[in-house]
Length: 194
Image 1: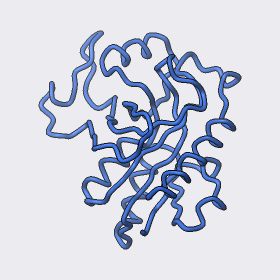
Image 2: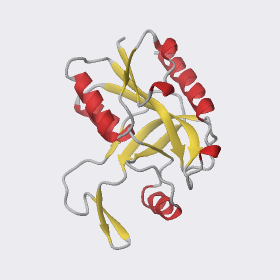
Image 3: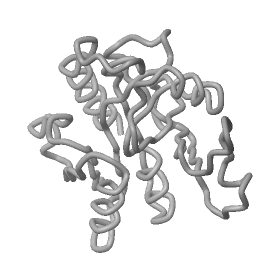
Image 4: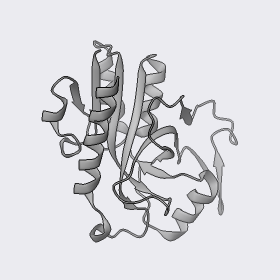
């Protein structure tokens, strides 16, 4: 099976663990992920793409280092502000899909993600997005990855490991080493089980 691993940064992938896969490092964020993956798929069609990366957790029942399959993800910011409120793309008549899901392919616990341009770090905006979308996790690439895979009709899995909780920005509370270690171990086990 031809498997492509997509990650935003080199730090998130232990490349020696995946020498049987192709690895594409997109760069952080929606524009970089969109460009890198679309460009790659113009000339390559893998059997499966696994997007692996770290995420912030809104869900306080999760633990830093927990790994999830994100089976639903959405662009949280496409729409319009209306005074104090938010109007979705549908509310303002835009014909655009902003939410993506798929049937889970692993035995991992499932999480609902949002994909953001700005990582949340303000209590008001955190409460607003939690009330509006009820996300478990946030990343900066997940929904665009799912959108592109669906449009290219390629099987995919999104796997995220919790590196921190979504709160006022405090990098002292992050544990990237644990999150990345658990992420790589879990993705390796998924591939071994295919």
